[in-house]
Image (cartoon, rainbow, N blue to C red; front, side, top):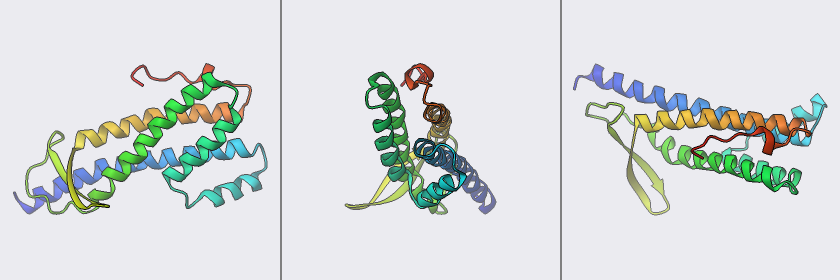
Length: 179
């Protein structure tokens, strides 16, 4: 394979990874927005302080905080909690996916074969048991980015329910049928 073709393939892989990372950043921002909406209803200064407080939180910590707050707000609304927990379960899965998939691809310049959307790409992960190799595909990463779009839509609707407490999540969160 020519150096230029190899470089073009690596660039296309990074483009898909970048697209996924942007959608994941939207997810993290929406979790922050939900937390701020739950804790403050009005003061710009308080909201700014809350965002400052959360600026270094990662996906897992944000999810844990959001889950705790949501369970306090909707403690007596089991129907809403059931839908919210389904959404937060998908968020958790994407956090795991991101950590297991994106970090190992920071160094893929070793590729020496033609890569297509369906080709398996080996990734190197550092685990408690040492170095491990696993595989994924470009189409899998792209599909997970599309899943994030749906999750982000659901989190946006949840934020509206939190902001306007008279909107019940059980009435305003219609989950996709394949959840």
